[in-house]
Length: 323
Ligand code: UFG
Image 1 (cartoon, rainbow, N blue to C red):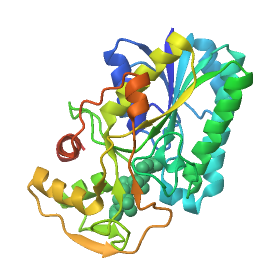
Image 2 (cartoon, rainbow, N blue to C red):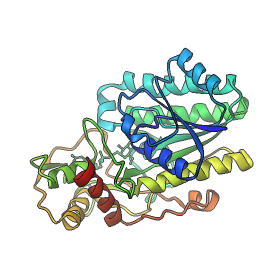
Image 3 (cartoon, protein in one colour):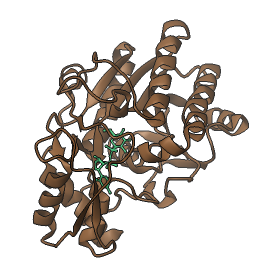
């Protein structure tokens, strides 16, 4: 029996595939390679195709005995989603609808869903718990929330069990340095800061320093990608064991401002990182920090790499050597 990983060639997907392989699980990866990279898939059976393609997806389910699904395949950029809301709904929501239909057809009950802190929008509480209000400020977060709601109804009436994992800011890379964060175009803070340290970019533009935070720049909760990967395996175990659906935050519970990330990156890399203050980016909440107590308690999640320094060190290993 295999685990189907949609979007397994993407950033968090490929690191989770690595963790599954290290755990000796049988893995089937589906990815249309629009954003993902084939060389990031380090094992398992690979199908190149789009989960919205019904014949393709049907074939994948027919050819392998799938016991559960981890569903990453989606667009995931806040800024891009503001410009292309229809594309985001089409890819993210329609893709999931098709996936659920074929899970149902082939009798696959368990799904771990890649959700996001972007479902909360401008948070009222710090840290944010799963019971806090969801009010996304961008189409990306809205599309993920729509899927969470669909999963809830599917679990109520269609005998589908789900765990939605709301990631805060995924960062870092596999410790080996063989895979890492590789988006094109790159919009995420840590890779851009490190590319600037390497001289591949002239400077990093800070998107606004007039937010209501101590240094005026936005605060985020950076979580190591391998800690996220571990949580997916624990979520699968839980679904297999008790079939109980649920939603979990995944973060470190500690926030760092954009300026703090840049300072820490200077320390880790020993390089100069030129900075310019620019305008705010549309759709950016001023602070996002997680409470992950529920995941720690119910999934027995134990993040191992939880210092910003370690996250930047591993990202640096990937960016400076392999990439
Ligand atoms: N930032 C800059 N300059 C840059 C890039 C980013 O100042 O060149 C700032 C952003 O404005 C933000 C912070 O750095 O304040 C982090 O930005 P990222 O683009 O790295 O990450 P986001 O917080 O926008 O979004 C990420 C994921 C989303 C997820 C969200 C959850 O991309 O999928 O974290 O917290 F929803």
